[in-house]
Image (cartoon, rainbow, N blue to C red; front, side, top):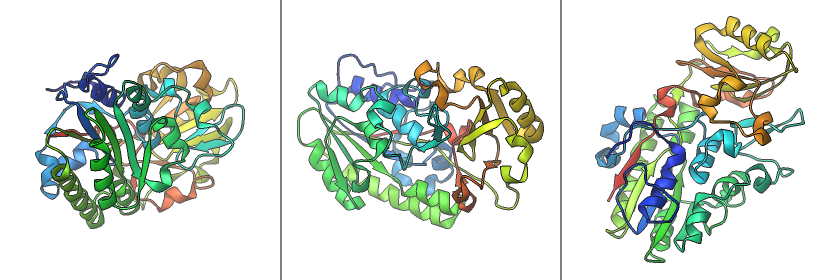
Length: 363
């Protein structure tokens, strides 16, 4: 019941196949069922869960579908859009935590969004949730109430009812009520505390361990409250690594790396570098020389292995040069992204610790 090379964009489509919906294939080998709950625990990488199995006895006891990877960049907005559309980033066009708005010198923060950007134009493909609802499956999103009208929700989960909650116990009740609406049902739910704590305190912290313990209890309570025939599937959008605060590379201290550069986007672990036309190779060589084996630098046209084939309509959102951090390194740009310097935990890059995610089946 394993698959060697499944990606996050195949999780929800596999759920569709397991539900018996036409046009969907269960490549993961999930249990066949008429009702599913899919819960995303933001930031809970598979490596982290394995290393702290004693803190999460319920999650660790669940059947794990091995070999599932988050996409690249391994960051929330990209992963949730891949999960929600069944597409890779090069097609759905969510290029990173921040990405260039083509034809401008501005970038879009894909979590905070921009009122001038229509989510349905930015990402025009129908969501998997909407496609399953069209198959007469009762589909519901249960999430923090403040996310209902967010651009990311509209990009990745639009087209189905949204139930806003504020606490874990509210979520439990809302999920159970939603999954009992019909004989065929799917509920998508989301939990952010592990990711939030990891960013602020690091994944090697007592605060993070406490957050994991609580999430494990919450998920166990949810499983106990669900009808026995409902399959609970728990997954994540990425893992996380701690970046030491005592030796951080900041572009502000290396102005030569801005030569021929129009805009720097992405995030500290994965930078999109937009260059002056014709300067791509020169900029890539300059960054390789300066950063050495702490990063992997590629031209956009050589990075389709990471993004999938890039649709010409979204090509300008991806950097002419892309820079993926390795080990515990990161490339900061404090003049544009000062808040990143306050963080301890990061993700976004190509490492196994950031990309390997659990797919846990309970019930």
